[in-house]
Image (cartoon, rainbow, N blue to C red; front, side):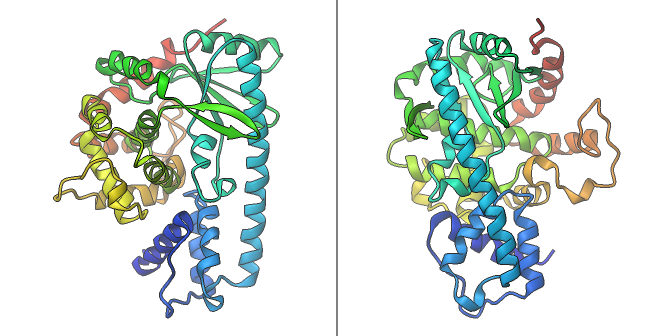
Length: 367
């Protein structure tokens, strides 16, 4: 691992994410080094963010022209995909509301709107949650249109709509500890009146209240770290949300949510990474993390795991057991992550795999 080059990668990430800063004047990368940075950016799905850093570099610091062209073509494809995705979000939102149900846009494009350049954030799918009985009504509506719906474990379903991958979620949060489900339902009701509105393709779309959006995005990160990994894009999401909402959230209330759901100790690790590597000013954190916090080990897992753990080179030679996961060496990886995260989020480390397998049998709707 070239530590110096990785440090430059993070510098570029911070410049692109926050729209300020510069590389030291003496920093000039060779073509091979720029190719490596591009190769690192892809599995972490942050190539659009790093591309935005180029506007802040000196001419002699830019990637070779051939790589810039290749990079620009990729960014153009990302922009086109996001534009089409926004059209589908607006169209579906209007269709769902006409049915009398209340859709809430989760993660993805809802978070992208808080980036300096929303079209440069890569978004894989569209996630909806529905209040009250909306999940059932929306599911029936999609099936009546003749669209193939696949009900999946984890209390969700997915399908394709106008070439976009859509997911509906019964549960608002990704935490699986059964002992906190009543509490999760209660806070979702408590914050109903605080929900936000985003304009997407000229349609006003509902999103979660700031505290709940932060909690949802961060607990989603934890879910994937406990299983197979999570890339840097989602940490950029968290940082942008904290920066956007720093003057709007009730800091003590958010801390209480983390505490009551048993993930506060892990949240301290997350916050340190957001400050030290993603560039979030400490002043934008809702509360301070302990001085002895050491998140270096978690950063290494994030770095190697990449987007949802699909790119971890440490396990490429491992066997795939489809009964466990599509990831090589799935069982061994789950066990290692259980041991890593148990000290920081013990209840989630214990209950997530249990509820994950349970939902395969009782979490799937069957007509």
